[in-house]
Length: 137
Image (cartoon, rainbow, N blue to C red):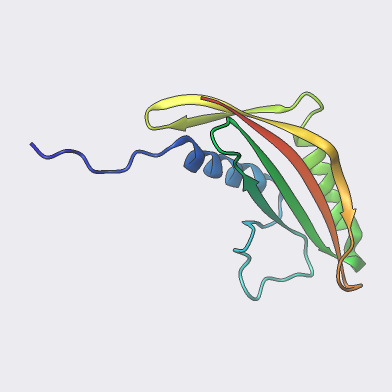
């Protein structure tokens, strides 16, 4: 009898899917850091994010950057407000499924939650958002 060699999805692979879906809820393009497509219209805001998984723990750190054009700060502030509204002070629970199991992810605000980051030029503005992620699997 042949063993099933198909790789079962693990919790971290599905966490990325959950976070991709989370960041796509804010009416602007969102990309994992390093995957922003060439030719993206940078006149409009967009989000990049990364996930840091400490070894062997059920917690992860996440930071996201909102890039926007300095001349269109209202658009950037609109995205910031949407994200702030989506993550309450107590955090948010998002369902997580993996390999036939289920659990959830708790997303909480880190401190500082939002901060302005200096851009290399005067055309862009960047705001960094810091979030803590706890996996309950």
